Image 1 (cartoon, rainbow, N blue to C red):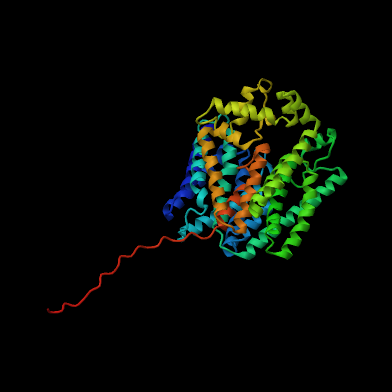
Image 2: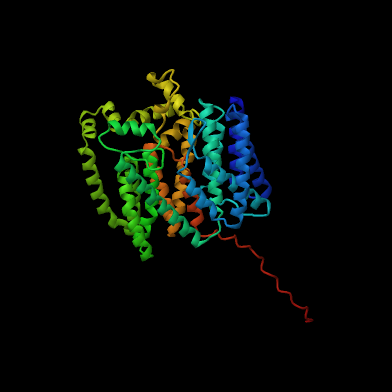
Length: 486
């Protein structure tokens, strides 16, 4: 089924590209149709041997999605609320922890999108400035499945992340403006963060971590105890809390809603301690960068003093760590690798892979396979989890080459331009959250694999002022006069 996956990836991603860029109803429906066809082909190439179970699950998913699509048509804001609720829920499938409930919700969103376009919805380029870079990046990712070094991993990447999350972004960007819906989304996000923090407190107190054997094993031998709450990984838990904290910080700094600011401060207090016991260094880094960006937005150049003080304090704390201090003193790669929990070696070899394949990369999903070929100790091993990338820009460069990296940078610049050209709260909070996820992805990866990223990118576009229609140029009417005899 490898040949089918290599054909299906370009079909699905080029369909998404057409859906994003086209303006006519016929072309957009064709794009959605090709994306659906490609997704079905990818699913067939990855289907388990028990076809009865696969068919039964598909029929059940379609039935539930049809009911949800009808509900979304009556109340569109149910979509983001359900999507956000499904983000922490992962189910083991195809040897991965995947967001199966979320996929059912997004299948309903795809049905609703098709119905809207078929019934004359003429809106196009809903994602504003990021439309072109995202569309071209998706096309390049799909084409790279044709030369990837790991077709199975690449097919899962396209099917489980790029196809459904593009639909998520489009559906969120097309929502009707509703202040109550935005408040409900913020309240849900904040309440989820508080509840997850309380679950983390319980885990920390009882020394009982759910599900993940790797975290259980590391806690048994580490000097500190990490919690993961309802998430699979403590770093993913920390990332979610950081994203949940940023809107509250924006509300407090802006000071427009005093009652909300007090409630937000109480939620921040609880969420901060929930983040603290995750011991996620990448999450702390993401929060620091987000707070610095908020300070610059609020106080401009006066924030320089606070930033300088924070750099001095954090730098002193970092150097105080024995592992970091030894690595700096001895300047050894092994010391840096130990201080960064193996990330230095992953990043260094990832850069070497990118240099060895500069133009088109090793293909989507091919990082682990290419890394195992380069590192001798991984030769012949089937479990390549230790070769998983922990840095999104390096992964993009290694898998999609300079072309993909340039499109990725263009995407980030376009998103930043949308945020900076308005002072509205929604694009600001969503844009700062995207920046936090980007910083987090420098240490943990999973920028495009996180549905929160796509939801936030869509909220940036959603929160912008509506695009003004082009003014029609009317010719100045020629004044007609009656013929007067001279």
